[in-house]
Length: 184
Image (tube, rainbow, N blue to C red):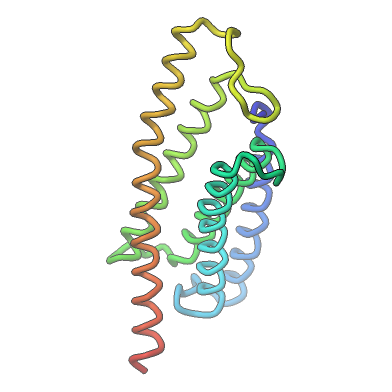
C-alpha cells in the first residue's frame, strides 16, 4: 500500500543530503558547479541512471506478474523514490541553465515528475491489497469506475511524455559526448 508515503519521505531525506553536498561544493568553490565538470557530470549521470531504473525496472516487474521479484507495491515505492531523487539530481546537473536541448530535457523531466505526483494521487484513491491488486466493493462502483478511467487517462499522458523525455535525454547525452570528446 502507498498510503503512508514512506517512499516520499525517503526521497525527501536523500534529496536534502544531496542538496547539502551540493551546497558544500558551492560554498567550497564559490560557484555553481558546471554541468560539464566532474561534479556536474556525476550528478547528471547518477540522476539519469536513477531515472532510467525508474522506468525500466518497474515496467519489467509490472509486465512479469508470474515472477517472484517482490510485491508490486514495493516496486511502485522504488519507482516513486527513484522518480523523485533522479530528476532532482538532473536538475542540479543543469547548473540552473535551461536553454537548448538540455532545457527541453529539464522541462520534460519537470512535467513527468508532476504527472507522476498526480498519478500517485489517483492510484492511492483506488483501494488495493498489500500486493497492489484492486479491492472490489469498498467504494461505490461508480467512484471506482471513475478512478479507473482517470488512471487510464493518466497512463495515456504519462507514458508518452516519459518516452519523449528519454529520447531527448539520449540525444542530449549523445550530443554532449560528441561535442565534449570527439570534437576535441
